[in-house]
Image (cartoon, rainbow, N blue to C red):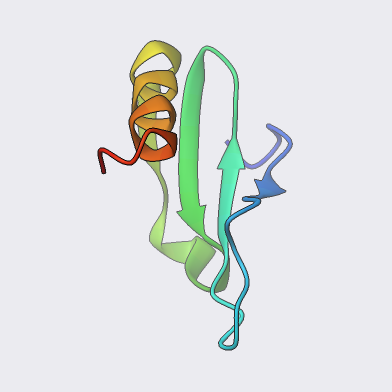
Amino acid sequence: MSDFGWHKSSYSGGAHQDCVEVSEGAITAVRDTRNRHLGHLEFPATEWAAFIYAVRAGRS
């Protein structure tokens, strides 16, 4: 996944500069910017879209 075009999540930042990076495609991958060496989590794109929808709707 290292060549999949990771980008910083729009929800990352804050006082402690906590950052999450996302690589979106058929599979969405999520990783901690500070701990890239620990790997990433993968989700089918449809599940990721449902998760984002639920968060935006306040159902997290």
